[in-house]
Image (cartoon, rainbow, N blue to C red; front, side, top):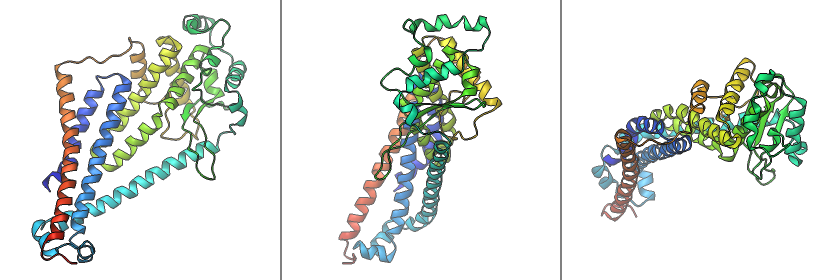
Length: 372
């Protein structure tokens, strides 16, 4: 049963390797790498703690009698199992309580945000018309020199097409909710699944009038494309995975911030490709962050994705450079190999420890002292 301890130790080595490798990848690949590594490492931790607790539980007389196990044989085969179980069981219980608290807190945040928003019915019927109305009500108030630069960003539009309506005129649209609030904010609010007795709700793009006034027309298009990218790729699921993984193992906590950054960069690249101008997207991110920092909307959930979150100067600098691409090198390959080895060892050790426990139970059931 020595292999059962490996998944508890490997995250301390694998997490820094995952962060290092993610820095060299494109944003989408980096986000998938960090989330996948977090799932494998957190799953290995959970399984190891469960196996340790189960091995000790089997040596309790009532459990041994229920499973028709030979208690003397189990005690001789794994004399340290009760001690390890005494340490693993409280930790497992504490992690379960922490996971429930995190899920409840996230659910409460989302419920509070949805309750603060108007009903979806008016905008669901025609999100494009609603976006056009929002653009008309909040015209571009920036100086003429800044407004003239919109021509370079509008090359992807059809003649006479409004930039704000064009970004919402595709089948994968999400409802747009414009709040009449001078405080500047914009974020992607995840939807909720349909359940018996409760209707489902699609994800929404929430933006305040204060944010619309802070940006020019093309910048608004970039902002909405960014938020729609968050919803289309379900980035809230990535954030939830990172949050729960951090609860399960302390070594996985440093993965939360890099994952959030790469998710924002992923949405930045999607928005830049949709708008067709990286400079416009960079200005939209920078100006949205400045406006939101002055007066954010108080009901925004803590774990939702927003264009103005994360290390904004770093994101703006990345957008002002050519589209990123992976640059494989000797060091990068070595880091990737080391990370793959850690993940493979975690998975293999978990499977081997599970098989060992299964064989132990089978052997204890066939020993002469087994209770029938």
